[in-house]
Image (cartoon, rainbow, N blue to C red; front, side):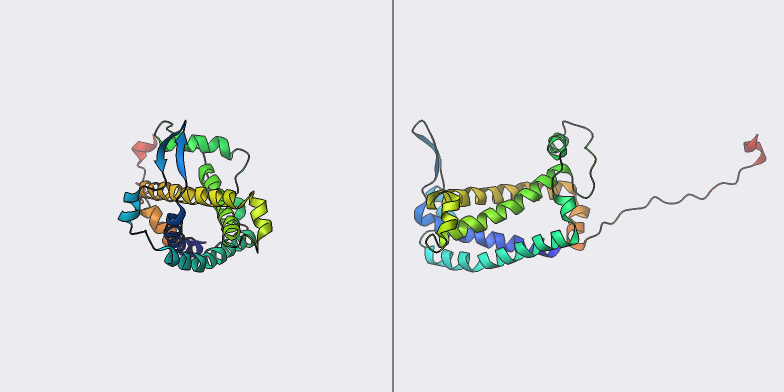
Length: 221
C-alpha cells in the first residue's frame, strides 16, 4: 500500500501538469454569477508563470502515456486492498460521517477530545474512499474525452463529451485540494508520523522503568 501511495504521487503530479498543458488550448471554464466573471481558469499570468502556452502536443504525449501508469497503479492498489482485507479499515461506516465532523472540530481546536479511531479516523476513511472513487471517475471521463467515438458508451454514460470534460476538470481540482490538505495534515502530525508512512513503523519512547524500593517495617505499619 505504501508503494502504490508513493508511486501515485509523482504519476498524479505529471498527470495534472500535462493536463494543464492540454487545458490551455481550450480554457473555457470560469466562475460567473449574474453575468459577472469572478474567476477564470486560469489567468494569463498563471500560464506564463508555469510556462504552459503552446505546449499542447507535449501535454497530450505525457498525459496519454502516464494515464496507463495511473490506471495500473490504482488497479493494483484496489486489488491488494480487497485481497488483503484492508478495505475494512478504509470503507466508511455508518457513524463515520458524524465522527468526521468531530474530527474536523478537533483539528480546528474547537473540540478538545478527538473521537476514537483505529488505524484511520472517520475523516480519513471518507477521504481515502473518496479519492479511490475519484480515480475511477478520472479514468472513465478521461477515456470518454480521449476517444469519444470509440468509447461512445462511456461518453454517453458521462452525459456528453462536454459533461465528461467538466467532471474531469472538477476532479483534478479535487486532487489539488486533497493534496494540499493531506500535506498540511502530515506536517501537523509531526515527523514521526511521516516517517511511519515511509517505513511502516513508528518509534515510541518507552518510559524509564523505576526500580521498586523495598518496603521497610515502618512503611508496612
